[in-house]
Image 1 (cartoon, rainbow, N blue to C red):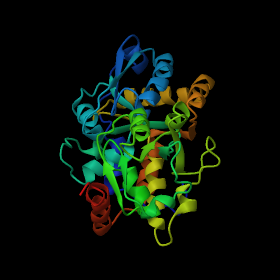
Image 2 (spheres, rainbow, N blue to C red):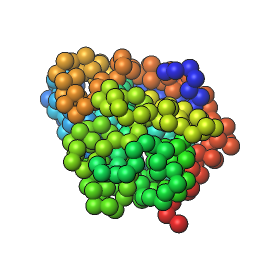
Image 3 (cartoon, rainbow, N blue to C red):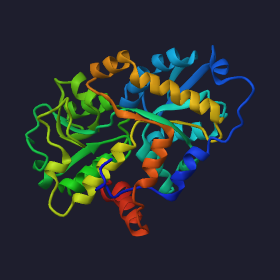
Length: 335
């Protein structure tokens, strides 16, 4: 983490590791998981980035835990349906989210948005093994050549629910942009762009790679080896709007975390963490990610490190929280 990132975390982050309070049993975690079935909820649709990544992780977690892993797409409410389900799941270590939208998990709870039925600070983090990078995609033949080009134009931006679109808009001066929610699948967003329903959207690298005839990347949340010619938002930001770049970068740092329900037994959480670390180290996993033009995280981010990382981020003031809420939930709504 770069020390210059002044963002988004809150005192409750220290509770994440403490939330794994369930007692360890006389049966070892390895014995418990052998032959069991782990249900890995995905917050989004079948072909969404996070579901794709969950399916990549699943066979390796099977390999290192001895359990069967079933990925269950649970779209709804911009990811809230899956998070609500995880929050109330039996805390036995058999229900997880392998690839979570960490930023929305926090902001949806922080803003007390409708449909949120969980306390985000009580989930148990298991680790992070996938590098996170968000790109803004536009049509293959879009006239926009640089991230500043849309600044004076009215256009529609597709997301499952508003998040990265408004952040990019604030950093790049896209004041006339309107977010159109409901595009749960990143592939669906690419198709919608090709049809002219929307002009831009947030996606992962694999969406661009899988749909080169439909879309291309306009700007990225950070420098990306897969797209060396695509500028980062830090290189494109409008003067005076640098804090929005810091928000984008910081939220990306907690994207794609693995989480378990509150109260998951300590030994089982640690066993899953170990399985994720072995997955991160596995050459086959790295090759699988490279096929979708993504990479493992720069170093395995453990339960402890993730919690320390989140605690180290500077807390937003109440004023900043209100500003963030306005930008993400109101400013770019269809008028």
